[in-house]
Every structure is written in C-alpha cells, then in structure tokens.
Image (cartoon, rainbow, N blue to C red; front, side):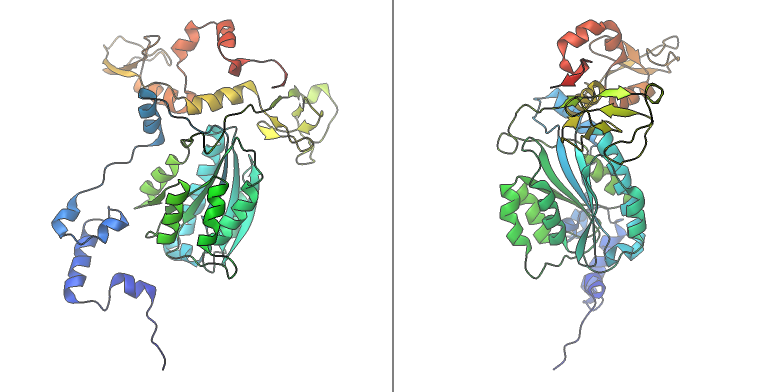
Length: 409
C-alpha cells in the first residue's frame, strides 16, 4: 500500500480544509499578520485577535529602564557564536539576503558595543554546520555572502550546537557563553548519533545560553531548549521586527553568581609602534606587514589591532579607551529630561539654536538638542558637559578605566 504525501505548504495553508476553516484563515491574513505565531493558534473568535502586541523597546530603552531602577549584573566579556541558517528554506522569498545583511550588521555592532567580547560565525546548510570564523574580534562578511548563494539542504540545529559546544567549553569561566541562531527553516533534523535532548544536560553544565530569532513559526524542541538554558525564542513578523529582535541581543545579558563567578581578569596594555620609528615588521596574527603594531608587555609579540589576543602567550590586549567603552556599554548614561526652550537657546554640543524642545542633563544642567541627545546616548554614551566640568586628573583618580599606564593588570 502506497501512502500519498502532502506538501508541508499545503498543510500549513489548509488547502483541503473545510470552508469554515478557510474563512478563519482569510480573516487572520486580513489583519496584516502582525501577531505572534502562538496567537494565531489560539481558539478565539476573530474579534479577540484584533488586539496588537505591545511595542518592543529597543536596547537603548531597556538600558534606560535598568538605569532608573536597581542595576542588574551583566556580563561584560561575552563569547557568542552567531549561527546563520542557509538551508534550502532560506531561498524562499530570498530570505538569505536578509539573513546575510542583518548578520553582518549585527556582527559589526556587536564588536563595537562589546569590545571585550569575542564573536564566532557558523553556517547551517546541507544538514551540517560549517565554521566560517572562530571566536575573535574579526568577522568575514565576504565569506558569508559567498556561501549564502549556495544555500541548500536541510537545517540541522544539533550540528550547530555541537560545534558551538566544542568551541565554548574551553573559554575562560569569567565569560558569558552564548549561542544565537538566525533561523529560516520550519523544521530541524537531528544527527543519527546525537539528538537535541542529548545536548541539553551538557549545555546546562557549561552554562551556555541558547537563543533563536526565527523567520518561521516556532519549533517546540528549540523553544524548549532556549527556555531550559535561560535564552529566548523570538519570531519575527517582518523585516523591521527582525532587526529589533536582533538589537536586543546587543545588550549584555543578566547574570547571577551561578552562571559567572566574579574574578580578576589579567589583561595587557601594549605599547604602540609607528611605522616611522621602526623597520617594516609583520604581525603575529596575520603574518603581514602592518603600518601600526602593538607590542605585548608579556612576550613582546606583535599584534596589528586592539582589542585582541596575543597569538604567542594568549594574553588579552586592550587599551584604556576599550575598557572605558566596555564599561559605558554596561552602565548606560541616564536619560535627559525634556525641557521647553526659547528661540535664543543654543545646544551645548553643536552650538546651534534649538527650536522649542531640548534635553537637560541632570548632573551638569547643560541643555542639548534632540539630535545631540540621541548621539550622546547611542554613540558617545557620556555627557560632554560633565566631562568639561570634571578635571582629567580627577577622572584618573576615580576610575582605573582612564589609566594610561603601560603594562599588564
């Protein structure tokens, strides 16, 4: 007896369903598909489905809310594997273009806003996982774009978790271990010798947090894995919503004493060598002649950029500006209060006349325009008026983040 196979798309669209079911499906599609997948599966009348979900706050708003209340502990040093689904399902509606574009932008912003963290890149296709970039501060967007054009096969999330587990099990204990999967498939297959449930105890033991941002409906086994490991499973409704969900993962996650134990981290502050003061030399990381090199204070190895790890002694190399930027990303600047301004008022930062609304800093009482207010909180992350009032010597005495002394800590 030969069984007739029905395509998955036909089942999802209910082509062979009753007339009443098809009418309910038309009503759900008429509401612009602006709800989460689980809300479409509820047995509720169409009138109750008209309620829209609450707007999702960007990471900047989340940091402002956290700064107004009790400060939560967050992981400053993160080790994150970014997994991009390039299976055959990514070719549907050219989703691979969105995945490649958003993953490239996310990687660049992640390294910028988390300078002490390291990022790795994995690609899922043909029921296997391919490592495109190891954990580090470099990102190969060109290689991801080239391999994305050959998207094929099925998605195997177990292979990605197994590869990420191998790379994260040897990272230092003071770092936060994370896996972020950008999913486009409606299903995932398991390996013959390993299943999803077999990896859950190991992920818990190693304190690896798994999160998924999906362009397709929820997959129960992956959502259960995210919940058990302390991550989150989000379903994107459109392109803008997908970008908002990715921005949430730029913020350092909340941690407790069970996940990461606080301890001293040994770092090196290298000395920079300019091209005019030396002969042409090659760096240890790429073996190429560079215009600017940094000397490791422990082994005198040459590195071409900061922050990085010395390829000889594996010492983290940072600078005072990198530490200050990492600190500001965890402890954000408090929001300014909106005030009504006159036509003769000037902005403290750009010195331009303001229209009718400005923002006043609660510490230095300086007033800024809306454009400078957005730039200060999203890019600069420190008030220019407060920096102008505080002498440089006082800043150095208050915090070691501004220390310019060379050596290792």
